[in-house]
Length: 382
Image (tube, rainbow, N blue to C red):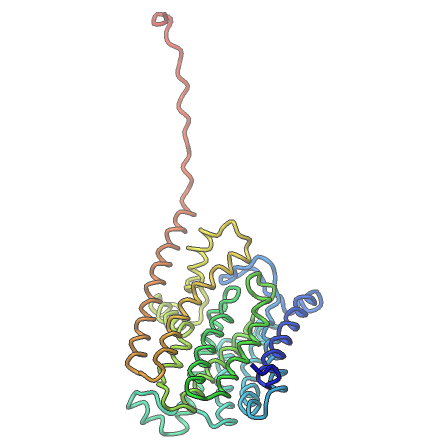
């Protein structure tokens, strides 16, 4: 391996800058903590120590530096991507700092990033393998709108699963590795290298976030990584038409499954789809598994124990995507299998979590002491 190659240098610089910035953010918490610390109270809060939630800054800086030292062709691919990601990233950072940016505004910002990326690159979803939809997507404005909605949906889906140390960043890395390996198999080296550069930069943050949770990804980081994963998935099919559109869907499958199921579940329970609750799959794993079998661990380690279960659910569909990138029938079957696995695991975790909650709220049995035995009458004593 040529260690002087531009993409290797970009990998190393991106990783180093992301790691250094993450450590610096942790070390300077006392100066910015009043704006950046994540509170410990809330229906979706599981950490016990206030923690900075601006890890997205470290990732963005790492990506910028990696882009600066990349080759010209690599910059032509990564540069517009980072520029287009600005609305999603900035609105996420604004929410991290103010807690006052609405869900609707953040969704619009992620969709705006999708439109901006189309304007800069000309890339959009042109075919899906569904006849009627493909006919409609032949009209460019609809194709752009559909692409922006899909990209914004994945970005918000990554934000939804961002609940435990390493969960969202690890899931995105799994998806990016899948997209990169498919691109590599197709001979699209620049796209593959872009995926791996983003993985390396994310790893710099990951080393500080997992397992002890010294720095959180935050909305800015979640939207940034979700947007990058979604747009590279769209670009994969656009640049390599032989790849089925189901392959990138499987690369993004776990956060997509979680989001779709959450919306359906909340509507079924007659609650607003945007209303937070503690019934996400990762929350149930925390209660049913980490809270029971790892209760002797410290709180950060218990939180970290949740992520490998979600990584497994992300790795299964990613494996289907890498194994059958051009076989639409196999990929559809892989989607059904993966979603069935998700539902079965959710059902089991929900059942186990309910049982544990019942045990926790059950009043302890009160032992009633037996009355002291009275002395036998004198007439019966020997």
